[in-house]
Length: 611
Image 1: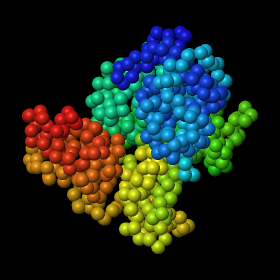
Image 2: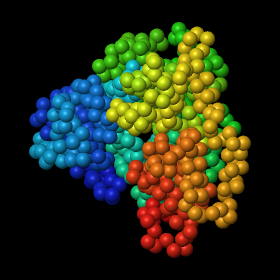
Image 3: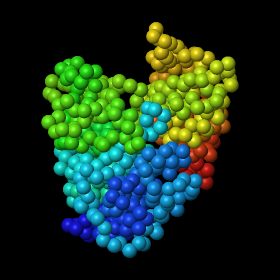
Image 4: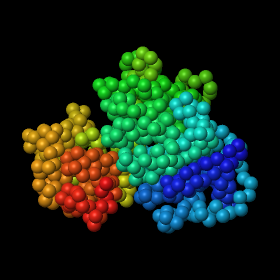
């Protein structure tokens, strides 16, 4: 900020520009307001605001006041946010007019960020004056014991993550996209990767992320040179436009197992100059390893997660913490100077996941037990094999299936619950298998009430897209629930459309000749329901429900848009499919109308959503 006061620090999605000097002044005003409110060094402060500008100013203001910021998504259920605030020990939460109402019943003090920015920016402790081991932020992940757990990250870990690392050469000429949710740990890399290197942070409208054409235009208009894309979104975008990132200098992707086919598609099209596969949990400040992808074949088993970043060590160990030699697989443990402190207010889980490092020369060092199974290649790079527990990734977010199961089992009409991650038509989705309470029957489980119950307890990305009610669960010989048997049952449902004997690919080929099919609304409705059911893995959809009510989510929407364009010859915008007030029957009617009046669209009800 001292070296480049007049350079652009931030460009919002609406094109508003904020210089480093303006950012510094506003953040210092917020810091002064927080100090006046009683915030002291090492205090956690919640930040629940909309828009990247407020988020950056709020987070930097907290750091200047000596505290650590806690990003809070106002869309999360109130009980979950209250648990996060309690575990982090945040007595003050920065809010704005659109988020403040969600904290009305909580005991924390609310501080309006717009009012805070009017405070006299009395000189405060700057970021560079902070102790390297001081708290920088607390980001929450899913917890296996039934609640979120906060990962405490230090200033030193953030600086190590963002500066002088080989995976992304960011400098004053760079423009870094800010596309991740503020509550996602990857957002920390976007913000500090830009600001600690004197680059410009560029906010990307969330709606643009789900539309390759709009995203391409936004990246070009803003001149984005570096971008992080979570793997699930990367797959969907590349599937529709493999050359989408050709104009971007560096593209990072990571968050879950990568599909070699999609990576090969990018390399075969017009790839960015640097395509980098990243790996790392929140417990290691977002990333711990990297692999620049230069070659990848669609037939490869996996995309390597690579070699350690500076400051980290990667150990492949057995259950007794002994090194596993290549090519055998073992559990990945991460050591080094920048492993997180642990979990806020969760000593038991901290002790279970952070263990003494038997290989360290520095006393007190610990290893973080990732739960990921990996194997080491002959060239020293690591490849992901699978999980040693019930953790999965949903749109890049780490999700403990046990937390969802615990929430479901709190329902009075449910006895037991098992949650699986299933894949349909290339889209991964959560499926809840539930057994009624003792003495109850399957028809007594109210699925609508269950979904409403979960909406009050869990973030939307953790709510299962389907529910299967069973009288009993299949058991393994040792008496435990046989998850593989449940998974086979999901994929071999007797009522599934695939059982008609018609191959999906054959049905699509037949449907591609749109000129020979009827354009009446009833026919289009039937075809749309079949298409959406295939993508969502749902046996029967009601035309009266919206796509969201039917279990749809953002990544499924992208897949559906592509299928509708391919099979019905119409391109829909995400706004229509994600509208909770638009029924599937209405969408089908709009498609039929558009097909029938292709040469004269003016006045069409659906024009707002169609290209």
